[in-house]
Amino acid sequence: MTSSPPGAPAAAPRPPRTPSGAPAGPGGPPFGHFGPELLRDALGGVPAGAVEEFAESWEDLPADAHLGTDTPYRFRRYGRFRIRADRLEPLPHAAFFQDASVNKVHGGVERLFAPLTGAVAGGEVLRAVVHALRRHLPGPRAGMDACGVHQIRVTATAGAEGHPAPEGVHQDGHCYVAQVLIRREDVRGAESCLYDLRRRPLHRAVLTAPLETIVLDDRRLLHGVSPVRPAPGAASGVRDMLLVDFFPGDPGDPRDPGC
Image (cartoon, rainbow, N blue to C red; front, top):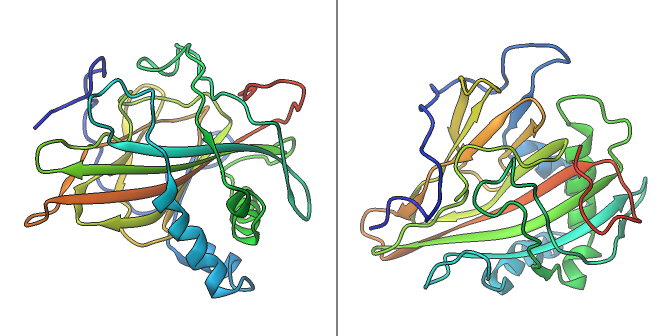
């Protein structure tokens, strides 16, 4: 079984388990850890069938062609939006870019992922989720009028673990990042860890309930996720995540402008 992907940095010290939230600091706590009730409430007015179809759309994610592994273990789609009061306005599809200073494995490379399907991008579920997450950003929301949306599936088999964060402990280069669990089946691991900018551990948790969410200030924290392995007795497993990056909008810039 592999221990880490090629080029991945050394692991940081493991942070202790802590309750939801974090010690207050300048600008308030740098993250929030929410149970599934937050997004369940936000989706209360959405037909149950639409929510089920949204979750099932993770079955149609193409393999991530940028992994550099013989066998793909990560599958994804990506889209960008301007956040309007009553809708999400799609922005032109473009490559996803992170600077090499924040992503030591894939930074400096324009990674073109498959776009979100029309049903996901234009659906009521995504609109409700993004607006709810924006209301719970751990800091000022002024100017946070654009977002990037990632649908990601990580798989694991008995012979090959999956790496949700092959770059190790890192920042994403955005203002805020939301991590929403969609599905976790027959896997162990995938522990989410948060650190301050001096790499001191603040919080660790395994997301287990669908719609359980961590929202963090990417400018004040580092984060990472441990590898995914099949659960005891299982030949394979999957972990599906919805990631939403929040940043100031600039429709004239094909790249996420970051913060």
